[in-house]
Length: 191
Image (cartoon, rainbow, N blue to C red; front, top):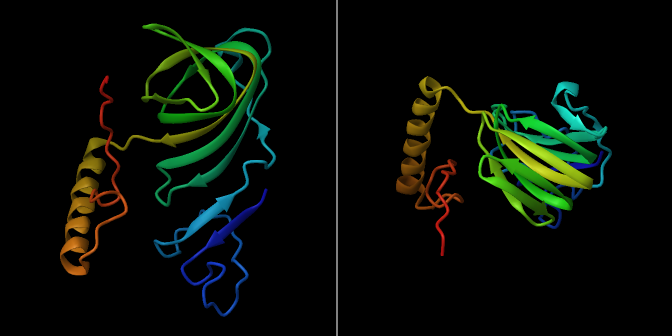
């Protein structure tokens, strides 16, 4: 697996003592807030079998690889693929997926929906969805563990205060549109 980690002092092309980027796992919390990691989507995926009790038809083979994790461990990004089969997936965390390749049919309480390359889907924690993969599907999944309210509420207050402080004392807006690092879900509206 190829990963390249950059900081403000190691971005190629800047006036650095070395233009060679620092390589690392990308998961240590000791780096500055402006660090980022680049990971190849062509890297090897590891076997990640579906719970056999979830499989309804066929013998789907699934593989995955974690490509990033937030410092607090509450958010992760995975590459995942699956061969033909029918199964029910139980989501214990919020998941937003983006289909990179292939297609599948999802069956939910409101009927069925075919998803194809380029589609984005959100599954809230607690959702159970029946999947039918006719040939193959590959996705990137953004997974977020919900924090207990007793933890989440003080964090939201702290993030908002930090954003207010940053705007007041640095005159800059945050890259999240003033949300102070918190991206809030906004319901989609029909046009």
